[in-house]
Length: 390
Image (cartoon, rainbow, N blue to C red; front, top):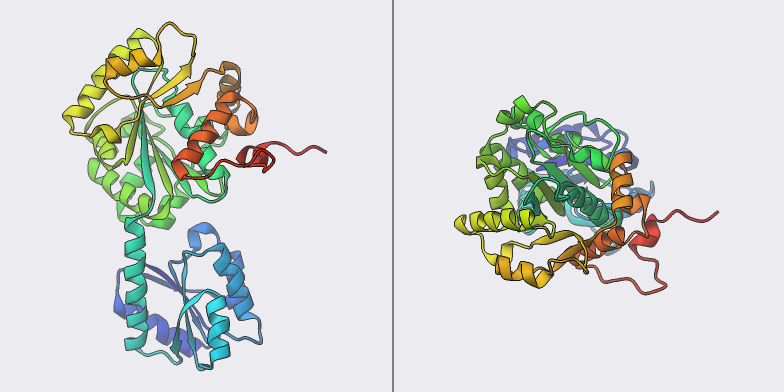
């Protein structure tokens, strides 16, 4: 766990940090200078799992600051060490988001017991956290990268979810270009080469931030570095990402090898992406057969038909017959909006929120997140993305 300690008393601060480090050398224990007010300056990568506050002062407004901080970061467990035990203080502490109030000065026994309880809760919560969704092209040019990157933006646009996209097309991946015109500072191969440093902060800092809650871990910039990424690296990265992101999207590309199959093993849902032409259908059948040989159940596979034309020669029922599976996800063909989005490196939902493609992506994001559709005048996700009139 990542634990931060706040105290105005240097001796108390040193004692608490010593006890915490002795409890578990694997925990990352640090302190915050400047008291509770310093919390407002922390970036996402600096946020701890557990915050220990020594003797928070009601008079100095510590509990008011903590209440605002806890509302913004409900996943952080707060523990207070206090000499005050009266019911009024305990009620204020509870309202401020403090989960445990322990006597101050702290003892190893009481502090360790509280941290153990929090650790167990965090472990249970992490096991039930983020969904891993894998997008794979049945044939080159299917639009899988476009859909994965823009769906990630749609999921993050509500502001309720943390979203990560990992570009698994190790030799020729360019997912970051679809949603940003900035160059990634690090790539998946860089993370793999420094896997011993892997923690939430390192993973977050290696991503290109599209929005504050949507990051892309880019593919290696040099195809020769593809071999730096091993299946065990994917295990470690995805297990960590699942604990710290609500949605982890994988742009698998088209190749099936030991690394990409390991990623697909982790996926809760796999989305083969194709178009309604015979070459796509032929390659799609081959891919589905591979998935069956890997013993992926039908409920794990959801075919996406991209650039769908209801009046096309090949109908959805023809696909369903050929694949022996239902096709429940279709994306409309709006080439102009998609092309402008890719050329400018701007998510299509931001660039053309009224496009039928944008509407379909937002609807899919709602379905995946369980969000209810907004009322007609409610101004849902799309309204937040449309530019305001002057």
